[in-house]
Length: 112
Image 1 (cartoon, rainbow, N blue to C red):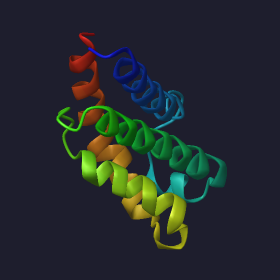
Image 2: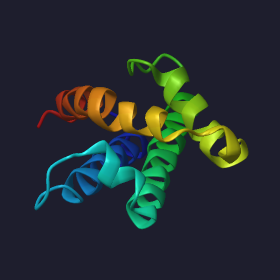
Image 3: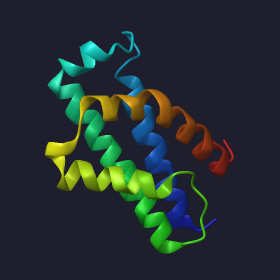
């Protein structure tokens, strides 16, 4: 595997693990997320990093397979450029439904 791609995959994994770490000592409750601006911004920032890493991977190797790569990049762009169109529901859905799958996929790609 290309060393740059491997680095970016580790960046994705690190961002997912960081998001997970916010909930080590408390349950994942949507209302709590909605009321904690620091957690919201931290999660958004990590999703931006994930999207940028996926974007860089595809620029390096357009045939590299990551499920939902275009949607991940689109979400990154929406958070950065269309921040006023980012809903709590959308981000929470990503955290609960999509990041666990992406984490498993990245770990498999890295052979972990």
